[in-house]
Image (cartoon, rainbow, N blue to C red; front, side, top):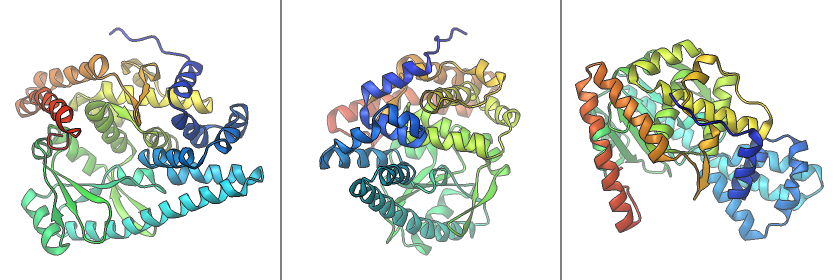
Amino acid sequence: MNKTQSATPSDLFSKVREQNQDFHQLSLLLLGSDELAAREHAMESLLGRDRDGLARLLATADTHHVVVRAFQVLQGRATNVGEQELAQWAATAVSTEQERAQKAVIFLRSICEALSSTGCPVLVIKSLEHWPDLGSDLDLFTTADDRGVVRIMTKKLHAQVLDRSWGDRLAHKWNFKVPGLAEAIEVHVARLGQTGEHVGLARRLVEGSLTRAVHGYDFRVPAAEGSIILCTLQRMYRHFYLRLCDIVDAANLVENRPMDYGRLRTIAEPAGIWPGVATFLKIVSDYLEAYRGQGLNLPAEVLSAAMFGGEALFCRGNFLRIPILRQGAKLYTMQVTNAAFRGDVPAVLRLSLLPYLGAAAAIEYKLTGSDKGVW
């Protein structure tokens, strides 16, 4: 397999700094040492921003689900140099986000308890990895059936069923609006993946799940290996972009929670996504090395399976992008080939619809400015 020559950490660092100053400043807050921030004149840059510039930085941090983690550092650094106005602005942003996140978690506990009444396990996926930050919606997975999920959400929790796209229907995914909760609830029912192609994988994540306490409440969540796989599915096989929270969250999962790379591969390989998992971890490691001087301690089996690394990233719009035609298409082709080789006809049929959904989404986006009706 031909692989692109990895860029040096300084190359990736320079690319992000040149292409998006908001990403650069937030990365310095999240990952950079005080010494690196001083060399980059980070505080001077922030103090030189007008009100609109600071508001844009806050909006970017919100999009990347890192307001609390980034702005707590900003508050401390501003306080240390006597910039009380900036410190207070950061403290207010942190307090506002913490209040939102804590309120959402209280609702989330009630929703999980209600869905558990089906007798099927309910996992909180992705959302709590950002803690003490929180995403813009709350993701759940259950092995219950669609009818049971909709009945409990609408009858017991009085939730409104939101419109479903073609992709939502194919993936067995439902979105709900719960009264009093700002965030939408997204429930994945028995399947995972953009087209609902992963059934066995979903079962394995449930089997390996564990209990995690957040804000005084216990939630069932995937183990570290499962969370890395879920992030890979979302970033490498669906969106083809990363948020800064993905990098920080993955680092926390790998370095602060037990990570069994053998088990990770055992789960990912039958699903045909091991190259994507390895590539995701390599990208994260390269970004960490660029901004904190040390990447992840990845084993040889991960590094050898990675198809590319941080050199492929580029900043466009609000995200760190992965080239979809060159890199994303390779991962998709390998996944389909794996499913065909294993004789998983349902998965092949579902995955074969993905290019058509992508084309339809592109057309809808061009006509309406949104692809929500498709994806």
